[in-house]
Image (cartoon, rainbow, N blue to C red; front, side):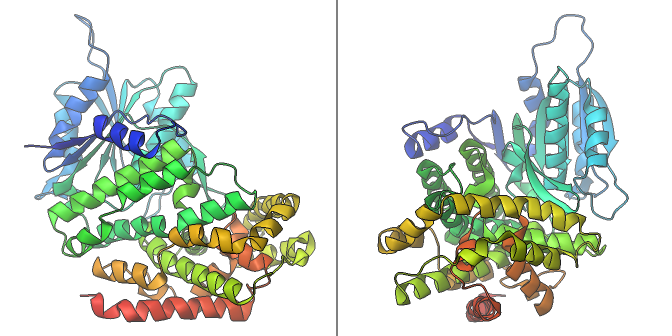
Length: 488
């Protein structure tokens, strides 16, 4: 069957256009195969990536990493198909990772197991969702640290996240999700026939993940303006603009599970992941909307409750994040000359806020202590750069336009999500998030991470009290309600 192959040439062309001065890191992904029937290219991809065999040598060893989830294409088991395809050329050892939960988590015990089973393998083929991909990247990185790095091929089975094509992994440490360096996959294979058959909620979640690019770059730029983040690269934002320029044109097709639109979504998510990798930070695509999602995951995980799709939570969070930006723009326009409230940087009250927020996640306060380490570092960074914060506020009329261009209005994001059939609000998620829990996640999202966002600026200005959070949630609810007629 035919496949459409993107990169190396097309990605190199995009990088050249967006980054003529070569400020971005090289792309470590060597093959990206997306299209109908791409599943048949797995063994060929491994063969191309491995050194040519010597006469009389034993077949290379391939470690096949999977979880317990059954994935099918036209009724056939995808993992069995790939194993049979690989077994015709290689010595295949299949490992089923299982942490005892209904859904596999990226925790140290699973990472240790995966690192052990890939040790000594010539190639690793990971088949499944973003969790398996993240585990495989860490396992291969550890194998490389031990002296022999196997080739890594990730087979994507749903367009739910963008983490397949970057060089980081999201792991769960002390009940808190953290992004850690791992490694680039050598190849990512996305069979659009398989992806189109994935549960609708997964691909719609992928569209939700896409919407972070409509708000997160503004948080990244804001952090650079106040001196809290030195990694900002305009070229990465330009590259994102190329990736998502036609997003609205295929959103309805995602809702209807049309293969062409699902393929476009898979390609856009793949390119987003590459942007994260070459930018050298997830901040380019991870702001308030991701913090809200991580907060919900923390709570649900701590209470042994089902964890929702990350991308779906991000989509609903993007509407809220855009609403926070909308409120900031309006308030600073109405109150020029606003100044930081130094009390917001006081460690004493701030630590009490963190402890109070995360005690409901973990009464032992281990999670709170982990979050406080990050949040206190953020407060210290802002304190050291207070002159930059004040200077930015003094010239707000000059920077406002740049930031406004990086944020799509909340009602526009909500309409795009509704058009794709994706959740627009926290209450529309599966499992649904009640108003009290959603408010907790939004109000306290900035307390969990060392990353400056619009919520941190609102807090610093004294605009993140009870009434302010209520206003943001009301704005988001209004945007969601207006988008409701778009849903089917």
